[in-house]
Image (tube, rainbow, N blue to C red):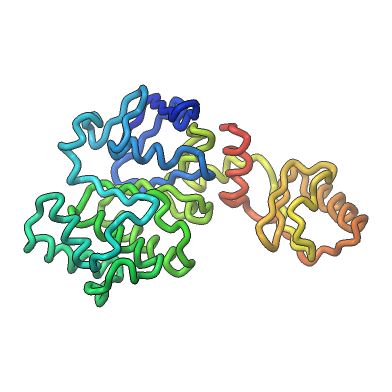
Length: 302
């Protein structure tokens, strides 16, 4: 469905894509994960033919990106920032987008009924886009991307900045669309969303670090993980603890990557006691995608 071979793209002295090769197969729910500045948006704009790579090959549905007009109606794209018309209503935005693809007014209306039902926008047809909540604006952008009934849907961080409930609803929609046969390429800065994908590519500094299923990534993780809760909220509390491979802080808990659980538990308790803290809870857990990302993407290892 999507194939990139040794793609490079620079903006001035900034190398945004560094020899990127990627293959998204039909009916994948494919997640592209990485921090801000990793190159995710550039990669997606290259896939959609919005910018040309400096070198390398891009194929979309077995067509070279240079012939994207042949498959444009089969491609739905939702950019990172809301880019529809705020002074048009929900229905007017859908109609305008459908008209750009030369769909008849009758066909647009027929498809709009289905799309509004899927996205939960029924009853809001006459509301101005500018008066929608952040989550509903993202649903409207998704609705406009679906009006052509694309085979491939490319979404650039569709849940960025929206409330938790809207995030869940958007992902339910993506699951439904994927189950109905639509291939989805979605980028996200949220590791919990990466858990929901069938395949995940970790991206950092313009490079693809690796591709695997969430389960595969976790199996490749080489350490045990201890989840520790303390009173302190100092994210650097465990800096300098002997025998600790890696540590991360997630708001109310620490994840400690260790080689030996028993030895590390003893060392950890001594380390905490010496600093006047008390352990509220500690348990061994399975590695999360956050742990995976810290180990593989940030260290650039595969």
